[in-house]
Structure formats: structure tokens, C-alpha cells
Image 1: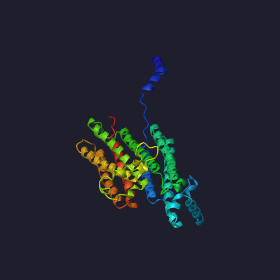
Image 2: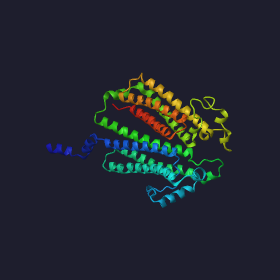
Image 3: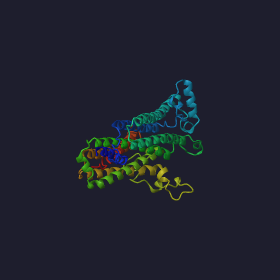
Image 4: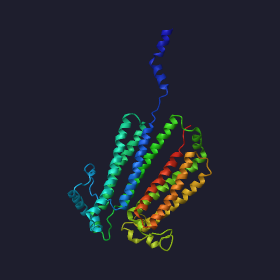
Length: 396
């Protein structure tokens, strides 16, 4: 009888069933991966600010080649500087705008662009090398591995977008256009900015999710907080937060068009634009920007500096009003402490950003204020990303 019992337990069918019913422990990504991603998000924030300064100092076209390896070393000797300066002299920006530029002045704009590219290279290595290490050690779940791989691919695409943008300002066709200003395409500049924000948002959201999953797995996530987040009363607030985030993104992208067209250098007053809140209709919908095959005057929305600035103002004002309304609505809701802190931070960030935007405009875009305004835009978006993540439901 005993032998029969042993043979039953050794039965392949029973053994397979026993082990298949045994719960398998899922892999939880280690917190170190989240801290690594937060560090990289900080670097991405920094490169966006440096990129803005590169644009504001008109340094983006100073390096006329893209060499991944050899481009890491800046000129050292006077001969190398002379050769680099001669390359710059062959392109429209020098021929049209900077004919009186000295070699020392060229060095200043060169180092801004070189620094921007070097930070980009460092971010690439900061993603690839630690990512390979964490992946090989089993520190990441399969889901997080796919996410970080996707972000790394986006980084590679961003490098391409950066050079694609610069090439638009090096085109010799600019020499043939009457009144042309040598600068990068506002479309490519905005696409470059949009990709950077996409990388930044993905990085911090993945990091925040890793931290949350660790708290849930270790039993440290407060049950009361989970219950509040799962409350159906927050559904409308959650939808409104996502909608506001979309509006903020559109506003930032319109800011990219403003920067690309130097549209902040006109109508340096607030709240008026000339004699009224709205500029003249003929100026907003000018025939000058209509091309032969266009159906309508829609191109003014993207290429007319007056229309682009008016759109940015309108979007920014709408963002400020709706953020305030959302904050007021949040006061009536039962929110966890982290969510309330996020919505209060977002309200504070929008006040600072509006102040910076108006100041930048009325003082005719000084570099310091303009750079702070761009950094403020990313800070405001960060507060919205934080709020969106903090509102995510938690399985009980």
C-alpha cells in the first residue's frame, strides 16, 4: 500500500498538475532601475534647457557636420579653429548674418552647440550601458526591458532628428530667397522638441511605475490610498487631468513654432497686440503665406509669426484658466496626499510659467528669461505627468 502511494506521487501527470498549480513568483523590477531612469530624466531635462540656450544664442548652426566619434573632440590648436571657422563661413548664416564675426565670437557659439551634442552622447551611453547591465543581472521585468529598449530607440531617432533639423538651416537654397533668414525649420525644431518631451515623459513614467510596483509587491503601499484611488468619484477628475495634459503639450509645441519663427520679437506687450487683444484680421490671415496649391489660408497658423504668437498666447491663457479650474475642483474631492500635492504643485507651476511667459515677451526675449520660460514649460508638464501617474488605479 505504501509503495502504491509513493508510485502515485511519482506519477508524471500528478507531478505536472501539482507544479502547474504552484504560484510562480513574478519578477518585480528593482528600485535601482527606477533611480537610474530618474537620473536620465534629469539629464534629458538639462539637455532640453541647453538646447533652448543653443537656439537663443543662435549657436545651432555653428557645427556644420555630424560625426559621431570624431565630433567629440573640439578644435584645440589655432589651425584647427581656423579650419572649423572656414567650414562655417561656407554656409548661409555666416554669409547673410555674421560676416563681421570674429574667430573668438565663433568659439562661443561653437561651444554651445558642441556641449548640446556631447550631453546627447552622454545620455545615450547612460541609457545603453547601465541598461545592458541591469538586463543581464535580471534586475528588470520583461515589460520594463521592452520599455527601456523602446526609449533607447527613441534616443537614437532623436539624434537623427537633431541633425535633420540642423540641415534645414544649412541649405544653400536660403541664399536664393529674397529676405530669407538663415535658421532651422520651425517644423523640424518643434518635432525635435516633441521627441525630447516624449522621451522625457516615458522615462519618468516608467520610473514612477517601478517605484509603485515595488511598494505594492512589498506590501508597503497604503491600503487607504489604494481605496481612494479606486473611488469612482475620481473618474471625471482623471479624464480632466489627461485632457489638460494634452492641452499643455499643444501649448508647448506652439511655443516651438514661436521659437522657430522668432515670433516672440514682435508685439512685445500684454495683453494687447497692437490696438486690441486680437491683431488685425488681415495680419492674422495674410495672403503672403498662401502658396499656389493651398486651399485656404491655413498656412498662417504655422508660418505667420503674428498668428503663431497669437495662438500661443491663447493656448497659454486657456491652459492657465483650466488648470485653475481643475485645482478648484480638486478641493472638493477626497484625494490621497500624493495626488493633492501633485495638483497643488501643478497650480504653482502654472502661475510661475505665466509670469515667465509675460516677462519674456514684454522684455523682448532676453536669454535668461526665455531659457527660464522653456525650463518652466517642462516643469509644468512634469507636474502634470506626476498627477496623471499618481491618479492611476491600484489593484486591491
